[in-house]
Image (cartoon, rainbow, N blue to C red; front, side, top):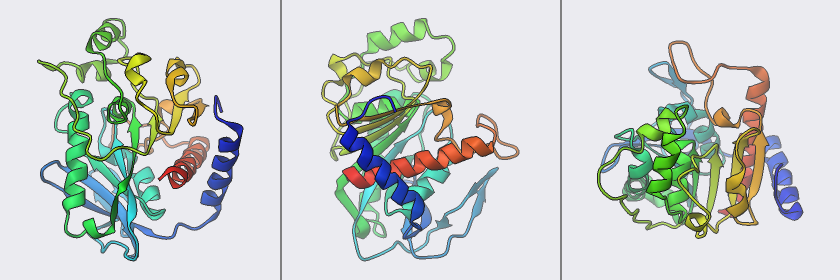
Amino acid sequence: MVRIGFGALALLLLACSAALADSPPYNAAIERLSVPQSAFVWYPSAAPERPWQAGPWTVTATQGAAPATGQRFPLILFAQGDETPLMHAHLAAALARNGFVVVMPIYTAARHVLLGPRQAEAALAATLEDARLAPILDPARVGMVGHSLGGAVGLILAGGKLDQARYAAYCRTAPADPGACRARAMPGPLPSPIVEHPLKALVLSDPLAAPFDVEGLSAVRMPVLLYRPENSAAALESVLPQSSALRALPSAEGILLDPCPAGATGCRPSKADWLALRDQVEAEIVAFFRAHL
């Protein structure tokens, strides 16, 4: 643990232990929305889980099952990096089983660092307007998970101001980060996101933070749970709110990615020690959102 108030750390670890010990109260279900922004939505359900295949990926969530009833659930926006959303299905299902609705936009272009905030808002709006899901949603409780390039999307929606000149300078000196820099090429000014549903809490996993300076992140005031590789620059930590929890992990750059199934590329292999760490991180994320949403 890199930096966190001792009281907050104790509460987070206690909640994490409870999340690991308790059986999730729901099963995971999934629906794909197509307009105005294509998105996968994971949500709590009482129906038995029926796994299905999406190409090489096994998705353990029942397609189109009836949503759980009796309460309204908080929402989690999920912005992935330069990969398919289904590479994060395990975390999305874990959140759904614990009473969260996860909205995961399917990006329409590789430039989603710039377009991602609007696409995320469009996906959230489509979910809130969905006739089957709207009755179980609480639009006043919205959190977000941002992985890699999606971390920049999360920072923007949390109030951060991306500096395009700083971004360009980073890309001139970062040939080993082609995904982030492919996402930069876009003519015209940076579109301003229309944030209709302010975030209450933010989880970042190895986020693309280079395009932001201290002033640009001064408006990010909600609690943040940050996972970063042990050898990465820690500059982002100095400007996050004091309520933030910061974790340095040996493999944080891929900790939210599902293991690589046969026939898939661009994902990490399955290792027993890494899977145990992945499960611990998922329990921490569940506990963090329980505490702040």
